[in-house]
Structure formats: C-alpha cells, structure tokens
Image (tube, protein in one colour):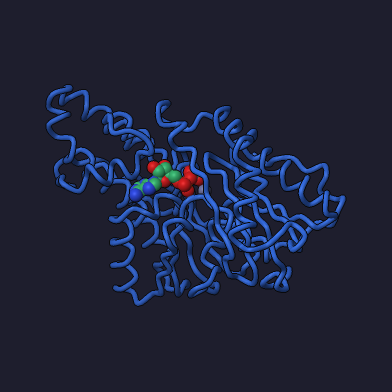
Length: 336
Ligand code: KG4
Ligand code: ZN
C-alpha cells in the first residue's frame, strides 16, 4: 500500500469536479480544515449544473477557498508537504481549474502532487477520523453524477461491484424534482415534499430489483413519473405533489437498498458505508440502518459535508496514493 496514512504528511487538497469549489488540509487521517464554496445558487435557475458556469465560478473562487483552507488549518503554503487534486471523473473545464491551481502551487514550491480519482475520494471519506472505517467494506456511492457499489479491500483503491447503466440516482431525483416544479438541487427538495406524502400512493417501478446483477437503472423511473404527471394533468399533479414525491423517492431508495442487500448476501463484507450527495437522504439512511441492524453489519455514516463533494475526502485518498515528484505532473490534464 502506497504511503499508509501518508507518513503524517500535511496535505493540501483541491476538488473542483462539479459545482463545489473545495479545498482542505488533512494530516494523518485528521481534517485540519475543510472549506466548501457551493455554487448551487448560480445553477439553480438552470435546473442543473451548467459546465461553463461552473468553470467560471471555480476560477473566481479557487484562490480564496485555498487561502481559507490554509487559514482555518493555521498553516501556510510552506507548511504543506504534498498537494492533492481530483483528476476525474467530472466536468473537464471544472476539473482543469483545480488541476491547474494545484500544479501551480506544487510547482512554485517544488513539492509533490497526488492525482486522485473522485470516486476513490468518496470511498476515502470513510478513512477519516473520528471512527475511521478499515477495509474490507462495501460503499454505496450515489450522487448527481455517479451511482455505484464499491467493494473496498484496501485503502489505495476499490473494485466496482455494480454501477448505473443510465442516469445516476441523484440525477433521477434532480430531473424528477424539475418535472414536479420543486427546484434544484432535487434530492433535498423531493425529500422535503415527500415528508407529508404517502410512499405507496403511486406504484413506480423499482428497476432491476429482480435481476441477478448489481447494476442500477433509473431512466425508466423518470419516464414513469413523466407519464404519471401527464395522466394527472397540472391541477391534480399539484394536489398530489407530496404523494408523487414520496412515491418517487421510495422507488429510488428501494432500488439502492435492493442492490446493497444483494451485494451483502453472501456475508463476505462485514461493514457498509454510504457516500455521495444522495447519502444525505433520511429515508435511505433509515433503510440502510435497518438492513445493517438486521444483519449485524457495521454501518459507517459520515457527516453530511463529507458525503457531498469536498476536498477532505480527496486529501484522505491522497494519503494512500503514490505522490508524483516535481516536475512529473506539469503535463497532467483532466480525466473525464
Ligand atoms: O455528491 P454530490 O454533492 O455531487 C455530485 O453529484 O458529485 O451530490 C449531489 C446530488 C444531487 O443530485 C442532489 O439532488 C443529491 O445529491 N442530494 C440528495 C439529498 N441531498 C443532496 N438526494 C436525496 N436526498 C437528499 N437529502
Ligand atoms: Zn461526488
């Protein structure tokens, strides 16, 4: 394993793969600072993330976010031993802002740089103190861009056990919320509306629940919601909004839980973790808590700000990836 716990290096990490501009300082598995500047308000009126808008906001925000991360950690640039940055997957223009900034900071100080896979970052959020989770475990990562089951046997990487064949779970919630006129980001909006609704009121398909594999699919569910809205018409849709939101949310969560259950079936994995923005969902947390209690599995639920995109998770992953010495990283570009 490359550099377990990073040899107690002070790591400054950057994450700009989507619409959050993030920088963090991590040392020996402990968060010294974790600064997140959300651009959600800038994208709200478009009902989703606009790549060009995201890149421009990252450019405006990145320097002050880095300064804030250093100040919160009571550190200066010269205290940093290693820099880390998300190389992908994500929006190319957005990633490049973080990568160029990290390269410039590392090169100016002739320090090493670690390129981190974004999904490894979501897994590595679980390695952070307090209560760091040790492999082996299964991590369900569900966000606006990704939905997958990661089998984690070592700190330095993971195996993809199953993943979405079309939309991500968060993307389905975002699109569903837009169809229901509930605003962006859709997951929290649907969860709020669902609180007063009946999850059994509409029968939306729980795709792939019977299939033998561990892959996911959410595009059929989106179409089912569209037909339900068309059949009801605008007035009855408005009147049944809470029931529609509750039933739609339940169908998304039930599919995630069905696949997680299947992954845990043969008792190979002693622990479960959740990551990605959708892991903030109360129903999903409750259902997975039940599942783990039933099967006597350890459940790790990190704080909300470590579920959604952040740079502390990138710093955490960087502890277990071999750094690249100066000037080896100067020609790095983004990995879509
Ligand atoms: O991990 P994340 O911040 O960004 C990436 O997509 O990588 O995840 C954002 C996604 C959005 O689709 C948002 O609607 C969803 O997470 N989300 C939620 C909740 N909070 C955020 N989905 C369901 N329930 C929530 N409470
Ligand atoms: Zn993410």
